[in-house]
Length: 115
Image (cartoon, rainbow, N blue to C red; front, side, top):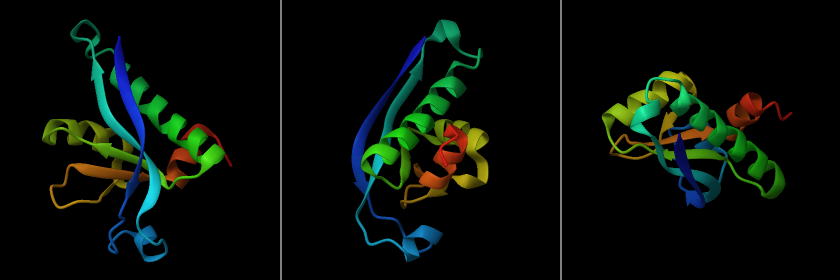
């Protein structure tokens, strides 16, 4: 069907981001480094399921060991559009290329059902 590569990372949250004004950088997060769906399953919602899995995993790991959310390295503008379509205004751009995105842990927790 597909796969995701999740790995611990640290990030510098820009001051323009709301949380960046409250947190000292760098801060721990979970990185969605790669995500892919087998060509035979494209268009069947597998990418959405894998992205949701990544968000829930970020919430669970943060709950266990700490972290500020899920960082996404979009490989190109099409991938960025995919993530923005699914997470919308909750995603924040955190680098000058516009391809590194951050989903705050509060949003991850909400999606995962973690209080």
